[in-house]
Image 1: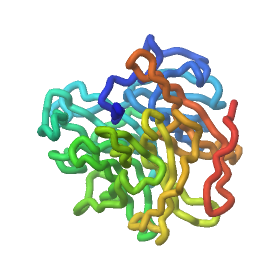
Image 2: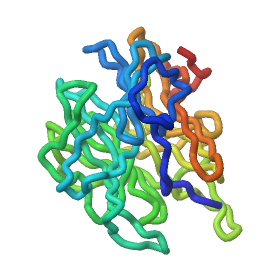
Image 3: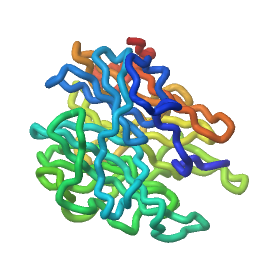
Image 4: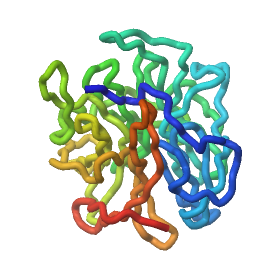
Length: 323
């Protein structure tokens, strides 16, 4: 089968990227949508792949896209990095932009015929949710010789901040999800990474290689949450053959160290994935995901919202939410 692990150009905004007003959510082309409900401004801010930002007061109509990521052209990213899977997180009074940056001009090696570009998770900071987001102290957060992506944020039970991210299958041939501790102001990383689990541990993701059915190699889009009973879970995305699919795992220890136990079945409909959770200003828990459709070799991805019940030990995905 073909492996679609982001080795492609994603359409990350409307066909014309001039700023527009009152755009319906289902008219926005955006991969990996992440929504921050900012109580300071009573505004929803949505970002994702492409380095753009959208704003809304009601989740129904959106203004944008706005450029908000300001990188250092003299850094390893180069002058025009590609930006994937951006997330916004508020922490200690500031706003942080977790994203994956790729410098296509720099190659870090070749593995099994795959030429691997310089790609890594990184964090920018702003005083406001709407940005602009700028670099902090450290030039790198993760090793330069490893392709990493889809970094997200979590405060573990030890009170320390962590980045949880994917180490890409292109180099290790069995994608992983790992964690690394961050400095208290998130300006850099501390120590070494630690493996949380591998793609091959999933009971639901599969692919066919040389006529054999084997576990899929892709890890994509981790996002952490607590149920109302205090159980730690992680949604993440892979493939069931050619179907983009999202599953969930739960930590037996209640910490990032796990062990992580994978649920047997996916939790979202086929061809929806790379999700995150947020609460609306009136307290409704929603999951933001993108739909996935292959049109002539190009991925058409649109944000969607689903209702979520987290009252028990497991999240239950409900009907699609139409604001």
